[in-house]
Length: 377
Length: 154
Image 1 (cartoon, rainbow over the protein chains, first blue to last red):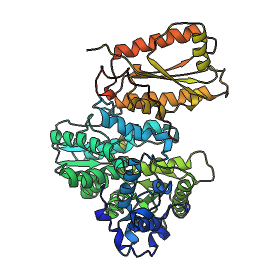
Image 2: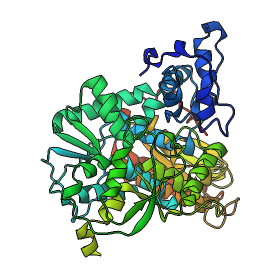
Image 3: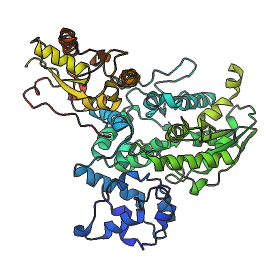
Image 4: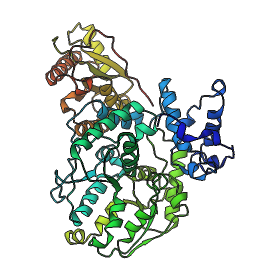
């Protein structure tokens, strides 16, 4: 992605639709996608340093979908970020850059990671299986955000339960590394390439026929970026919601009377065009009523989460989502992305003004309705 | 091959541990020169990110030190340090780095001899573990080069 050929900046008409829909620009006026694109078309001498605003873009693709000229503004961001990194600039980073360091450490050496400590005996896995369940960074997330009540590993465990219920015992691997999604979109190409090379080696070794992820960022990176660059993995990469949708008839589920609402993750919805899959997955659970938020599907608001910035404006965006969710009078806000869960739970913590609606992962909701889960109590 | 020279980063709080190191110095105590001390205002300031960053930059071990519990200049700073250190320990465990590469210790301004003994002990401990895998496994580069400052980003 370091070249900007696919971005088509010269087609820009300067209409400003991108900035008018941008969730960040709503609260943070220093970011204007329109201005960033226009500056890109200016001659080299008159280009201005985009400054801090560059890091506040969420690359959620809302602007891309609205652009009448099909300029892919979100794809311009890694290019710009890579350039300013070359000049020695660094993102402001959340948590002083701890999440970045975790990815960098994984890229630096092959370490004997203890990323599967959470596996319990009732989760059946098989190292020889041709279905690979991608764990992603969830064990790290849970350690970092334990005080916010984040439990993203539960989503992975739930995915294993769902696959087990379908008679599949997936493989999980210790030598898996971060997919490099954040490094890629944050313009840190070096780290991304190292991580990708290590993971491609792993795919060569494992030769899976199907890769299942619980994180849409991973499914986007493995399924699109890896395949475009390295041709691997040479198989289907699917988000767990697609698996649930495909096998809806075979899933032994019991009734769960509950009203829920769904937050479309930008990486699953706008980036991969999967709006119906998570809804169909929720529909497999009888008794579950889905109430849509005011902004859903193509118009969904991004959870405003990246490890590049976290500030007042991102919190306002998150509070907006939580208020919309609460306005549907649902009991649970279902997300299909570990990052959405982290950022929305973080926005809830320590602030009584923010609606405390329960946030759960899609896989956990479906796994909780499995007949065996009900029997287990 | 030259003997492995560990690179160790020590975060010392301004009010106790750094002064403890000073006490060791003015008392002319000998201790290992293989550490680079970074003074912070409080051990509570040393977040997981700083420790991880030291490792990405090639440290073999990281020691975080502050005032004894109850003595913190900022009252609860070292309690915060314990909390953050717990996260750091878990992250490093998940990453697969040895637990012995990091340590949290309390050293008061009067404990010069303790500081000297502690540093020697920690250096020996890291020496026994060998070079950090993040250094690419090489043992012969290193101590001739200038100490690197750990860049603090916020």
